[in-house]
Each structure stands twice: as C-alpha cells, then as structure tokens.
Image (cartoon, rainbow, N blue to C red):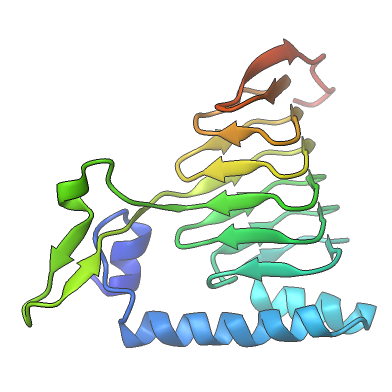
Length: 196
C-alpha cells in the first residue's frame, strides 16, 4: 500500500493531514524561517543544504524564500534565486546549472480539477477535503526566468531558455527559446550553446 507521500508524488489523491507529510512540512517551515531571518552568509548556505534535496556549488537565495517542504527541491550549480520566490513543491522541482530566477517567481506543482464537481472529496467520517493532484517541474541548464513568472506543474523547461517577466508557463518550453506572455508563447529562437 502506498504512503500518502508516495501518492502525492505519483499524482494521486492524497491526504495532506497525514502525519508523515505534516512532519515534513513542519521541518521545512522551521528551516525556511531560519533562512529568512538570518543574514549570515555561511549560515544561509548551510540552511539551503539542509532544506533542499540536492544542492550544487555556488547556490544563492537572495532575500525572502518560501516553499511547502523544501525537501522536494533539487538545484544544480551556480543557481541564483532572487527574493520573494515561492516553490509550491508538493511534487519535485528540479533546477539545472546556471539558472537565474528573478523576484516574485512562483512554481506551482499542485492543481485542482477544472470540473467543480471533482474539486472536493468526502472522507469516511463525512467531512470534505480539497482534492489536489501534483506534477513535477523541471528546469534545464542556462535558464533565465524573469520577474513575476508563474510555472505550472508538469512543465519541462529546456536548456538555454529566457522567460520574459510576467509570463505564465503552462506547457513545455524547448531548448534555445525565448518565451513570454500569458499563456507563454515562443517569441524567438536563441543560438544553441556549445555542448547543448
């Protein structure tokens, strides 16, 4: 039988009240609070390593940061995350190497049904719960994400990509592309980087 955490990561209905999930969220919240209240660079780096599942070299979080778990996030090397970014990591979020994220960017792995009759379920005790499904977000190498961008679960962003400020990313973005708009669309192609 699958745990609620396994169900969550498998994009199945899960009970967020599960003790294991609550413990994970509490641990993440404690580390995030520490990260957001210290200005000591060495302590911030140590907290990033404790919070995230995987951390490459030279990772910076500049300013306030928020997430649900933190432990579902993996980042490569030379990653810069600016202030007021929110990682709704109810599934896995992976950032490649040399990713730059401008302020106010949001990663949303969770979603609810478009069908209003399927948004709430009923527990055995008769109480209702919000049905949430999740999907991972993957960001490749050499990606620059503008300010106030929203990225939806299930999306893969390729290598050597620029995402314009304010864009909403609802579908995969191919390598060597500039995208922007709501929903985001291709603006132009970029020259491929050597090694891509």
